[in-house]
Length: 304
Image 1: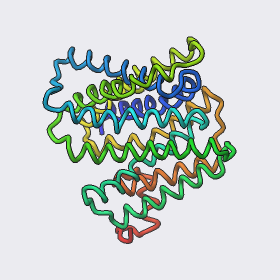
Image 2: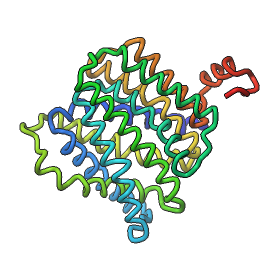
Image 3: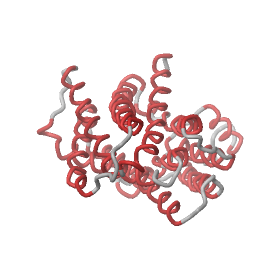
Image 4: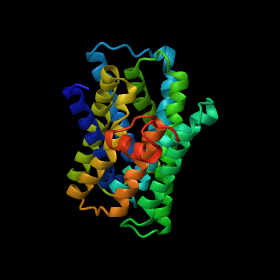
C-alpha cells in the first residue's frame, strides 16, 4: 500500500469515527429524524455536484430502484437508529457496537446467498458476541432500560449495514459506485422527508450544533464517500475494508478529547475482541491479529 493510500485510509477512519461525535452532540437537540435528513440531503447534493463536475455517469434511469433500496437499508434506517442510540450512549460505545456490522453481514450472506459459513467465520462471530458483552457489560453507563434499548438500536443498525452489504453484492454488479453514493443519499432524504414535520426540534439549534451537522454531512459523509470509493479503486475493496479496524479507535479518541467521555479497560478489551472477530470473518487480518491467530491455532493456520 502506498503512503498516500495509507494516509487516505487513516483520514477516512478519522472522518467516519468523527461522525459518532457529531451525532452525539446534534441528536439530542435536533432529534434523530431531522439530523439524519439534514445529513443525507446535504451530502447527496454535494456528491451530486461533485459527480457533475467530474463528469461521472450516474445511470439514474437504469438503477434508481437499486439506489432507493440502498438508501433505505444503508443510510435512512441505520443512520436514524444510530442517532437514536446516541441519545443515551457515548459516541465511543456506539462506534464499538457498529464495528459488528461485518459479523452480521457474514450471517446474512450465509442465509441469503448461501455463502459458506466456515469455522473461521463462526469463531469470528463468537468472538464478536463476546466482545459486545465485554464492551457493554462493564462500561461507564448504568444498564438502564433506555441504555439497553439504545444498545439494541446500535446493533440493529449494524444488522442493517450487514443486510445492505449483502444486497449490494447481489444486485450492484456493473453499477457505478459514485452513482450508488449519490443516489442512496438522495433517496434516503426522500424517505425521511415526510417524517420531518412531525419530528421538528423544540428549540433552535446553536451554532455548535449547526457546525456539527455540516461537518457530519460534508466531511463524515460526502468527503468520506469520495475517499472510500477512491480507495476501492486504488487498493481494492478488501484492503479498503481495513478502515473497520481503525474507526472505533478514532471514535474513542475524539470522544475523550472533545466530549470528555470515559474510556474503560473493559471497553478497550471488548473493542479489541470485536475487531479480531471481524478480522476472522472478513479475512482481513492486521499484523497483530495474525500473530495472535498463529499463537492460537498454529503457524500453518489450521484449526479455525
